[in-house]
Length: 209
Image (cartoon, rainbow, N blue to C red):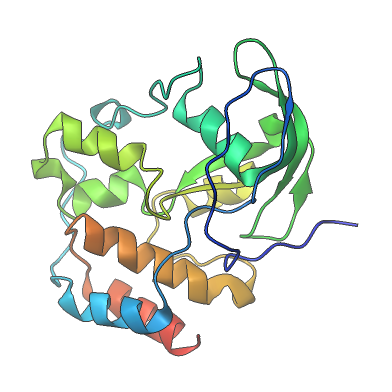
């Protein structure tokens, strides 16, 4: 039976990067702010029409950078969000269990899991990141401090693409509250803009918390 874990799991503890051993993780990114705080953050976000993707490329957001112990950001998140994760000498996950909060699926191969950027890179570009330095875009793309990186089912992540909450929401409606809290907080922390429909969708999701 699939292991059940919700977005609202407890705040993650630091996971030791020990190669070749099983790592017991808390199976969740950092907990986003409460719905009340997220609603306050939402009121402070600048509303603006989204920009275009002119000039955008994922290469302008250097991601999966080295995090030490031969591990990159993806590998750190796989350890953090998985259960009984084993790695090889190069820090690649060789076995483990991952629960995808977006759709409730459980996976036992790291290849079935994508690391989703809560606020997608292209969405960030259209919302203000175009004007950032490369260093700031790198920090955004590898943010382990806020609820920006999530281990989820690969095809569900691909379905989400770069859509904002007005165009895409997790298949599991019970997770909309935490999804909206995380999305709002990431935009707030990085001073990104929201468009009118996006803000309305977030407000409705937060109202349902």
